[in-house]
Length: 169
Image 1 (tube, rainbow, N blue to C red):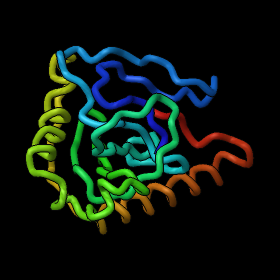
Image 2: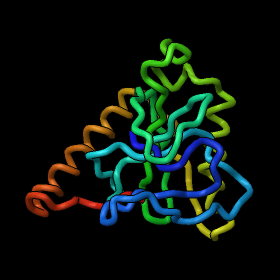
Image 3: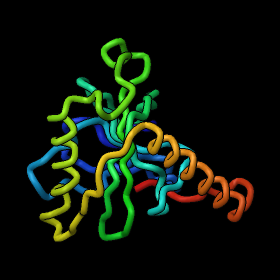
């Protein structure tokens, strides 16, 4: 994954493919912060036409632009004003503290509650709504990644060689 927003940040950064830089999109309207490092999986295209979102559940934040190897353990199915907005939930790969975590059920329930709560209300003061549709396991997370990879490759083929399929959000 590529980290756009470090854990505990209330700033929403996005990668701007055209400029090749990370830019500040906005500061969250509510006094909240991201519950984990948040970013995208390169070479994917989700249903919202952005790279597939991923949040890593870890005890230490990294930094914007960091490439982090993660292991998908599940997903949070949600819908926002633009339609489906799946969030892949992952843990750091190659970190002994997370070696035994392979499914969403192995993450502490309170951490999952915090993640769900964040995505339920983080856009509320902007007048936007989100709806949670539930947690799914690692199999569904991997399928979502494969489907978004296929969508990316199909879009890339349509747009021609050397053309970017989309930019991040």
